[in-house]
Image (cartoon, rainbow, N blue to C red):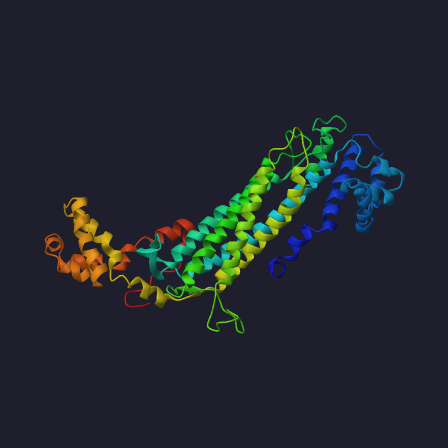
Length: 444
């Protein structure tokens, strides 16, 4: 399933072939830098760039004996270069190559995730504009609270995803750092000029200071950011799942022709996409925890982080890319039922207007505590006796001492509670938020 939804570009970032290509790119750039500062012959650097190749099968065969992937890689490359191979990896340690190349791949993965994020933002914005004035009940604790619009719900998600996009951008910068500083980061056998040259060519920043590795707080920030993105996606998915419940039925995932919901019950139409996203969010969050555990390593470096990153780097980036794409598809095709939203809004027989009465009484000089008791008394009657709150209020002599008939009628007008929708949309979308106006009275 994941393979079906993941863009091929993201998959290529994490292939073994591309990994070794980035390793080779770093090694060649180091040789060029060494030639520039006169530590190796320029012709050797040119020869290395022209001839250096590797064989996946050969690397695998050598690693089976050496039990060291970088040595296996260097041996395979050396076999294609000849005598000048002695200049490859000069003064370096394995992590110089591994971490600098990993920064390249994480940066490329981040760019793809940003594109996927943009696609979701487009889907959310379009749907928000469409349903800017689609009135529905807002819920707190799962209980009817006050009216909102479905567009506001979508605008909220849009605003959060926009923050996530900024977080991704920031996290990408945090991991776009290379190091070519040798065994324990002291540049004992390699000039800092080499690091500066290599990082500039790869659009990376040189680490201001490193041990044998780029410090893993950077990675922790990156994977924690992906976990936040995944959590926002789950937030959207959980809401879709709730709205699709039979008792609610206000929106549902698109159900395609020929699709089946259950092996036993032909009537079922389940929110399987959203459920899938909820499950995957758990994986991405657990990977973030693993990344945080990688921050503390022994002294200048151990390799307990290595095995973890071989799993979480491809898994989390591929999963988040997939999740963003699938969420965009769900939002784009989401089936919305405004009539059902209106029916649910009316289920509580006007209880959603209780605060309006409370505030009106307070403005008339009634203490808040007294006003609360007056309104709650009738609200509880509406619950117990299944009566309309407005009728109960109109027949309450204590409330009528303060509020006239026409005032009460205005208090039960949903438009009054939604008078600032345009203001909110303008804050989120700028002037574009004003494009879709509220329907005129009597029109839906």
